[in-house]
Length: 128
Image (cartoon, rainbow, N blue to C red; front, side, top):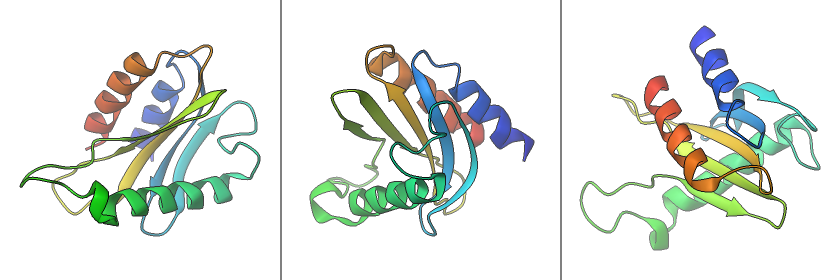
């Protein structure tokens, strides 16, 4: 799908981007991926990374502690930080009941978390 491929190519232009993927978090299936080192799967294959991302999103979306506190409140993104990287997961909001998330793996030393979050938000909006 050209729109997905273009979005992921643009995600890879974010300073420090190591990999990017669009994932259906209900199935754990990757709909597209771009990446450098080890594709988009640190210490695993791309399928395992997509399934792991889906599990994280499920936890954030379904767990009462992270559920929207007020009407209209939604999970904007999920950020996992390690000593070497940031893993940014952004739901793609569409007019229908979308179950897609944009995942970007960012090198912590090279990337800028604030700028990456803004770029990923814009990319997710473009996909919607």
